[in-house]
Length: 270
Image 1 (cartoon, one colour):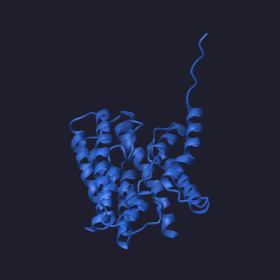
Image 2 (spheres, helix red, strand yellow; image 1 turned 60 degrees about the vertical axis):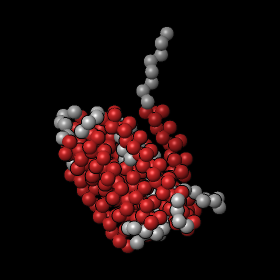
Image 3 (tube, rainbow, N blue to C red; image 1 turned 120 degrees about the vertical axis):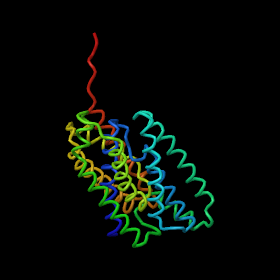
Image 4 (cartoon, helix red, strand yellow; image 1 turned 60 degrees about the horizontal axis):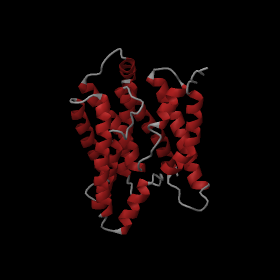
């Protein structure tokens, strides 16, 4: 139970903070830790590690996300932001397809079940070892420290006051990769939280200071994940409820309400 709650906290912080960094880095509200294929890469690495046993789940996830990050960095040297996001979506689909091939060729039904339960993001930490936890916590600490350290630079970049050089973007992508891997490799992919929560934060708080959005997004992400975790564990009506799907169902009405209230009203025409 302790480690489940620990990774509720880590995921509630890591994914929204990674998402808001993506939005500030690319100056685009569609920026997301999954939009460049990082989440899909983490899943592919976890699948390969689970099915083959060639390394631990977290290390496999880290290796694949590192490769994905390097590919995305090389693409940034050639295309603009809009093209990069389009490429990222297509690249993520490609990586996800590779993951599907790996999973559908699982050598045993037990391994397939283990991967499915991990992919459902249930915080049960199946197949996770002590070394995975230590490595994951180290990645989280590195990613969060880098996010805090570069907060001022990202804020000025988002405002158009400065331009982050390509090397700086690469280092930021690596830091975001650490945050993504610290969560996804342990708990599986969790949708909405890295895209929806940062956008809700920016809608609620009009400040462009990314440090404020770190705090708001982290609080919202952790709270939303905790409520979802408790619902899945204690109010499941006797059926299995994946965390990611359940959270999307719970969060959609809240997101719609906030967006509707926050949208400017159009002037009536006579």
